[in-house]
Length: 564
Image 1: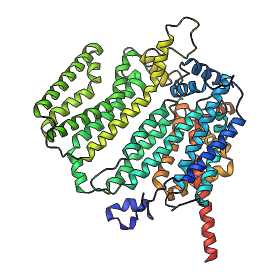
Image 2: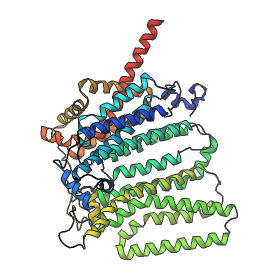
Image 3: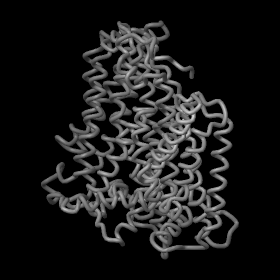
Image 4: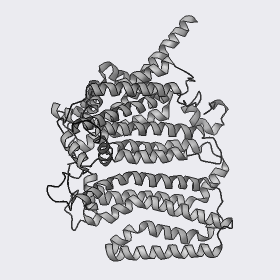
């Protein structure tokens, strides 16, 4: 990834010039980085092993060990990926099942440390022209990583059977892939007529995002922040494009509008069917009742599948018309495929109308209706489409990425399959949490419906904000907690977009904890809820790393001035 000087860019790149006035030169990881990451992984793993609990501990440990061993569902949201990977650790040659699962946590926590180092070193080395070991990059990166590795909350979860070490590992991997994804699309930002979307990394990122949610819903807030940051990122990239790029966009205005509509419909259906199900069937569900019923299931499935199905429809249709343009498919064959499509749509629509019923059947067929309308409106125009349009490539990448996201989320079906397998067994049956044999109960389990949502009373907001600060002081000490605030400023100066993401993600996540949990600030509650902030402590360790780097850079400048 070559360095690109901003001084040579035209005037309409002014936004990029202001964000990156010196250059844009992302850091390519070298052997020394993987060596340090491996050493930090090994060192932290050894310490975790030396301090590992010998067996079952208090809290949820006993329940999690039991459900993993029996291949059942744990308490909501079920933690399917924890159960699947954890089952592999039960085959280790140690006599105590609790000890085996504690080893799983230690390995997960060490993996989080490995990717935390790779993430922070890439951020710290940005625009630094680092070719080997650099005190101003590698020492702050190592120090920040060790601070996270042995922070109170992360270390406590590394030595016991709990889900939060794996949660930290998945989030750490996700942050690393996000950083690599952003660097790649920015490096190739100035291709005038194309939109480089880092296809392989985009697909990997979608899969990792889905996996991270199958352990706990905490990463959702970091994913939402990433989605919000796509707006300024796309604005920056589009500023580098030429007239042909805009023309290709205008050629695909309708499918782009319909794609946005599909995303909006998916969000709406998800809210009224899963988040606030009482809005959909007020006649059979009491007001403000949070549980999902069988009547909601078609809406939930439609919400999950409508966007990838729309993308698949568009991509396949585009490929068929491309085949027609290049004479590998004749007009008769294309008409036959059109007929098959309309027959399938009519059949699915009739089934939904008859078996789901009336207006509800029509509502869940909205994606199919949209596809049909698009086909009727654009049929003649499709023959004229430009054969190489960047929007088509964008939709193709999105199609695969969305299906990889759905595939990762399908791990929740593990609980459904295991419930089906356990149900016919004779008593005493293997212990599992709840009966997730039906999709509506499975969704209730996934969305933690048995737990109450925080009240609307924010009278203790100042106390909660103080508690959030106290959490960070407890992990890193007062000096490092203050340095983290300085590091935020230096991070913004060095890499404003990446810094903005982590700041936004931190604010959204902290707000979500205050709003959804509305936790008490008594010592017992604070001790219990500390584990919810481990991902945030990981992010804050990045900020501290930038503070350390700022001190190194300051000392280097002072030394240079003295020599001058």
